[in-house]
Length: 324
Image 1 (tube, rainbow, N blue to C red):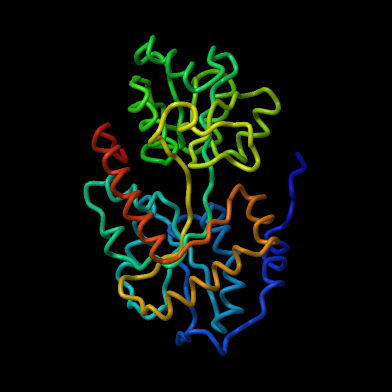
Image 2: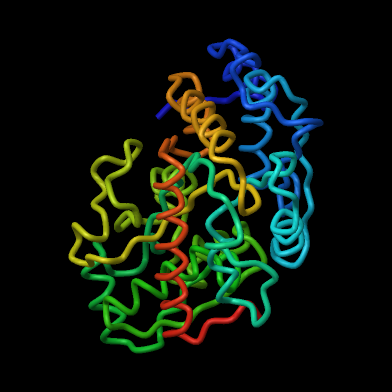
């Protein structure tokens, strides 16, 4: 499979080209718009924000600034937006970890459901259940049977406690009726290295990361954690198709603002984002980053935030998971 290699600047220019500035039609905000990223530069939300900001700037006629405010697993930047005035001058781009964090930490300075205005779901990233090739399991059912016969003996990796990869495997274990041992790492790279080396048996990986490793024989992909099959791996069944309905594990990224943003502003920003996501050049560039464009309405995004907050809170409680 040919991989698209584009520079960040080249991607931004490519995505901006199809859109004609429409400042006269935009809901106007006084002063620059700051998009807070509660994580370090180079992370998924940071890359996405820097791809989207030129389009938002052109379409609204406002200066758009990406502001990284990392710290405390995203809590610092998120709290800043929760406390901001609902005037549209401060927004944030978040991964779905911000709804998970609300249940992972003892004290969280925000309410992920009532404390923000969901504006636009931007992208999803599929996660795949993968194993080391030496694990004698050709599919998800065989892997569950293997783990069931060896309670606690199989180790699985994740980039850290409470990450979507960790919670996804905990959810799979619940539905499969198995007990496995979680091995948290400080990031994905060392976890993947140990998976390839056979020091751990399994993990969830983003599909775009897993595919080249599987094609090289370094790992085996068993099933997809998304609702539907991935365009990049059409032969890989979903976990629901593999006999585990209710097991859904993916990544998503969305644009939110403080609670109480004016409806007219929310609708305008949502329309801009959806037009950007619908452009074929956008889709190609985002898929090169492992992201699938997922336009929806503000109400649809709000429903997703509420639903994911509730279901991951249940998984976290059932498994006694903390951020420590």
